[in-house]
Length: 427
Image: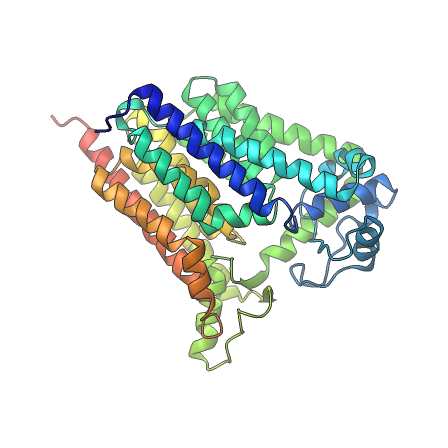
């Protein structure tokens, strides 16, 4: 037990979190803001009357080729070296960003969002921790030091801020949604999840938690909010842009993206199949992404894995004690959706990192701490840098974290099932 008083533990926790915020501000504030560039460009195009161009992208979406309009706009903004990424969000957000994209220079837009993302993390951290019932939480001093290591040293967090990734906002909305639902504020919680699903489509899968727990109020709020925003988007922006958006999602779903920070099983299965056939390996040290059409058999294998994981998720968590069920479900579904989505970017594992205290609800403390240490070590920037050196042999910087997160998912499912069985009274 810590010799620090509760007040001292809280001050230490806050101090470490603020120290991380200052370090992040100093070390990454002037980085390229790669992922937020897509939202700025879409808003700028809508504001300049060129909304038909918001889904313009290179043929394979994730190639680094820059569209002429992107390059010209960034040069006019005084950022000739800025790389712009493809816009893959619903059209309504481009409309809402049209005014700020024209009201301020791109660099001010980028840095304003960066500061917001820092504040979002500072809000998410206590929400994630207090999702865990008090008796099962790790000691605040120990978790504060651990959290500092996660925020300071792990690649999913570092990458999220290097690219100024909107996933940070989505993470706050999902965690806040769960926090509200855990306090019986179902409508408010469902509303926030609906908003998250309206920004990025994937969060709608988290409504599965409401279905399993028969929380129909939260489910209704989620569907009502996300559906209303979708209808509003169509009414304001028209159907053709939404058809283009759906085409873009379909295109991405049909691609294999081999990238040093894409932990997707399907990409690694594809590369392993190439290795078995004697096909020369792509050099993952040189280019950002390599894309290929996804073979049908890989689609079937990964979709079967996704469905099997959802079935295991339902079976292993539905009988957990009520006060423990939601945080464990949230943690597991974070891992499952991150692993089995069309893409498994490193920053998708940012939210599971903040929810690691959920392990203490289904595992003995020593086992939970071993997993937390494993996550920190394998997902660290140091490990990424080491593994990246061998990416010409295989995409090891993606393979090793993927295997680790997959093993963590399986072990947590097993632990949840054992905990649920132990909680069921016997006659």
